Length: 376
Image (cartoon, rainbow, N blue to C red; front, side):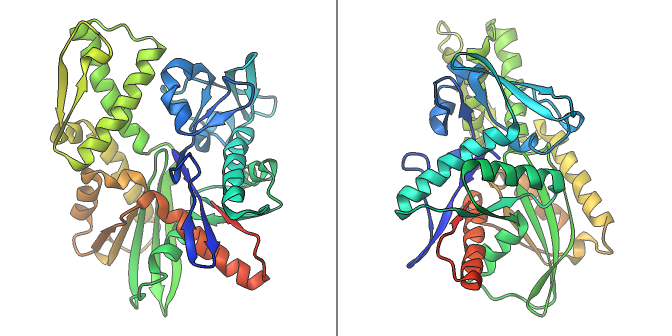
């Protein structure tokens, strides 16, 4: 949801494609400030100036009914409903206010990636594998398919993210016999859990659960609220849209820093030029502020185990994917609850899903004898 990634099959194996200038991950942001939509890091760089023209987090909206959507305080766009109680997104366009279906916005991202992959492959690609959360219902699946159709794909395969991860992780690893695996996927906007039973080299889904309104972005908001309060009360900063989205991006950077270092800081002069000061924050403080979010993780764990006859002590392996799993507090949270399990956080968790989808496409290609397949 926060970032998109693409992998393709080539004669020398699976390869990730640069889809945002020279980077392999495309921030899933779309701006309508120009005549033609733009997306990616450029939109983030200009967010504080053109927030009212920007749409993101469409994964939390697509395929849902209007009353199922939790409006996030960080959204600069408006979510309204049509006559069928479905959501529409209102945003400032090149020539005034415009209204978009979530599928249209997702299609812009998919079309951008399709064009980049076609440039990389040197040919037109009309078949795609798109990974989706395990908890997506039929309406969400249909909406994702519609977005892919609008982007120009003729053949669309939807693959659950947990299955894609298994393809990626175990393709060159032996599969242990008779064991239970918990897949913990914390992305930017969603949490997905899946329990697998492995028997005779086959994976069987025992249960899946999640929270489509809980992700790494909520940890950003914890930092945002912390610094916003201090800047307002101690430094008399008046928050307009420019400062609001500037602080939002600074909080993302601070969160990333605290994933690898014990402390970070916010430069007050970015919000009050007369103040040459820094607001420090240590990792332990951030973790304490995030306690309520960790409690929500615990609730989801309770939910998924209630669907099985298993207990946490039965889990043999915990596999962590998604960018949010880089936070040490997430890894510690899971180690404390799955004491006997082997814990693995993949080196590039954001890219694991795309690589797995590419392996799945390889299976489809051999099955259908097709060479025209793009993976996302």
